[in-house]
Image (tube, rainbow, N blue to C red; front, side, top):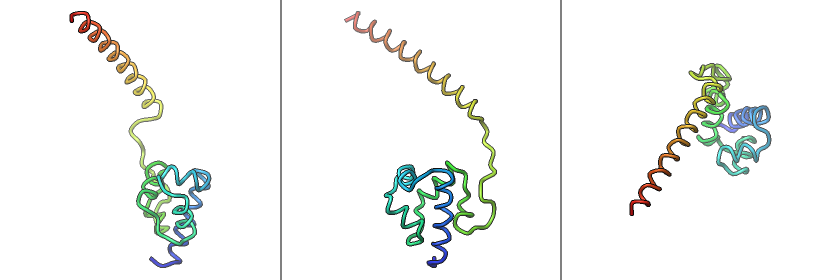
Length: 116
């Protein structure tokens, strides 16, 4: 990849970071990368690691093709099957089930130790 391409890609990533995430340290932490890596990418000194592109695509719905080429849609228009409310209700249901399972395990433990 040419230096000019890296600079353009770095600028796109920097813009996304400023809009969606905050500082370079925040992005580095989220992506599991060193802050120097983020700086090098944003300044066009190195290419973006896969884990950074994956984070921007999955968590922030930016299309990798757009980040790398500037072509196509900037953001994914993919609609998710479940809303946040649906997922929240499911989490509450699972927490209730876990609590019930813990209670059952406590009862079994106390019965097992009483029989010995």
